Image 1 (tube, rainbow, N blue to C red):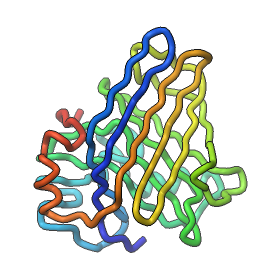
Image 2: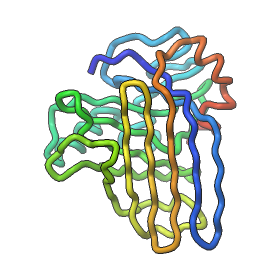
Image 3: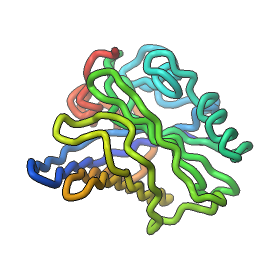
Image 4: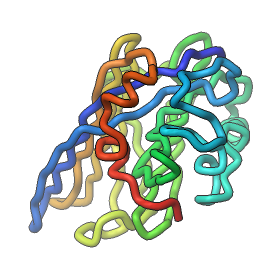
Length: 221
């Protein structure tokens, strides 16, 4: 998919429900790229090589540190009956080689409509699970749609590996808004990511205040 790299200067918020409640929000910067595109980014952004900000295929798609990038995502979608789609990757890049990315998203499009998403969830302990969500007939995903998946990964010490996730995606031409809700009886978590879509430039990377805003980076595991 031909796609000029974009910058999403966003805000993420987390609110834990249940016996041990907590809430916080902070600024976080994502990039939206065509992972198969040859369109170059700005000078301070690279694919598969060191830079101020960089996205590496091995960080995505499959086991952490041994990912296969978009090729893996295509295999997952094809196995579900969805071949021949265009794919974008929404992710936090490495910052000066350091990387920890709580969640990335492979966005699958057919006829310019979003029809499936793979949410790639990472934990500080080095674990990963990917949730592929879509309608049974691969109908376009609307902002009001709620797509479900059973929770399969231990993320928080205060939440069991039980219950279900509910995903909502609003990928508009000028803005991105994603909401993930974990429901398990009276317990659960609501996590959101939202921000405008802007061209990715070297000036934007510098203004983002690397490495403070980019991903709250930790060394790659």
